[in-house]
Amino acid sequence: MKYDFTSVMDRHGMDALAVDALGNPGVPGAPKEGFDAIPMWVADMNFPTVPTIPQTIIERTKHPAYGYFNPREEYYNAIIKWQETRNGVKGLEAKHIGYSNGVLGGVISALNVFCSKGDKVLLHSPTYVGFTGSLTNNGYDIVHSPLVKDAQGIWRMDYEDMEKRIVDNSIHAAVFCSPHNPCGRVWERDEIEKAMEIFKKHNVYVVSDEIWSDIIMLGHKHIPTQSVSEDARQRTVAMYAPSKTFNLAGLVGSYQIIYNDWIRDRVAKESSLSHYNSMNVLSMHALIGAYQPEGYEWVDELREVITGNVDYAISFIEEHFEGVTLSRPQGTYMLFIDCEGWCKKHGKTMDELIRAGWDVGVIWQDGRPFHGEYSIRINLALPLSRVKEAFARLEKYVF
Image (cartoon, rainbow, N blue to C red):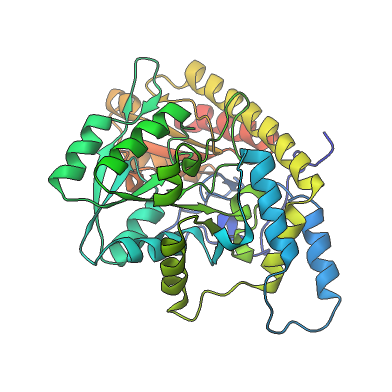
C-alpha cells in the first residue's frame, strides 16, 4: 500500500483520550501490570492520517497571523467535489453548506428548529450514546424504534413499529443514522426510501447523521438520505465531517448540507446563538488537505484495511468465542458484539467480562449505554498486528 496502516503509533502523551484517560471516572479501566493498552473503545483511529493534512496545516502556520477570517472558496469547492465524487451528489452549491463545531452540536441546532423542548424525537436502537446524552441534555425525549435482525442476521428497520411510534407519540422529528452507529448497517436505497416515505406521510423532519459515510466495507455503497427523493432533499439536514474519516476529532469541525432555504436559515440562526460555533482556521485547512487527491487514495486504502480487520475479527470470534454473536458491519470500523449466550453459559456478568478485557489491555467499550444489554463495542481501526494481539489475549485470558 502507498500509505502506512501497519506502524504501531505510541499515542501516550500526545493528547489521546484513547490511552491517556484510562482509569479515570467514566472511561475504561487501565490494564494490569504486564499488559500494554490496546485502544479499542473511543471511536478514533490508530493510524497516521493522510500526509496532506499536516502538510497543509503546517504550510498555513508559516504565516504568523491567525486572525478573523471567512471560509475560503477552496473549502467549499473541496466539499462539493468530495460529495460529487464519493457519493454521487448533484446540484450541491456553497450556499447549501453550513458549519458546526461537531455533528452532535449540528444535530441539536437542527432539532431546536424542528422541535420544542420536551418534544419526542424518534431514533433507532441500538443508539449512539452521543445522541442519548445530547438530546437528553437539551430537553428532548427519545422514543426508540428497535432495529431487528433478519434471518441472515442483518439489522433492519421495523417500518411498522416506526410508524406506530410516530403516530402514538405525535413525533415530528427523527434522527437517522446512516451508516448506523453502533450496528454498522449501510442502508440500501429502497430502505431509505421506505423510511423517508413514512416521514413524509407524517410530516417528520429528519436529521441524518452521515459522519461514517466514507468508511464503508468493500462491496457496499453509501446512499445520501437527501438523494432518494425531492421531498427527502427538502426535509433533511445531513451532517458530515472529515474528522471521523481522517482521524481529526481533536481539530474540531463538521459541516451540514441543507437544501431547504427556510430550514437552512433557521439552523444557521440557531447555531449562531451561543456565539461559540465558529470555524477554526486550522480545521478549515485540515479539510482542504484531507479532500486532496491523496485523500481519495488514502480512504480507498483505509477501506481495504478496515474490511480485512473486520474479516479477521469475525472469523476469530466465530471460531473461538462460543456464545458470542454479532452482525457483520457494512460500514464504520466498530464491531457490536452480543455476549448474552457466553455470559449465561459461564455465569458471568457483563461487568466481570468487560473488566476482564481491560485487565489484559483489551480496552473495549461497554455496549450497554448503546442499548445493547449484553453488548460490547470494539474499535478495529488499528494495525492488524494489534487486532491479532487483542484477540489472542481475549482467547487466552477472557473467553
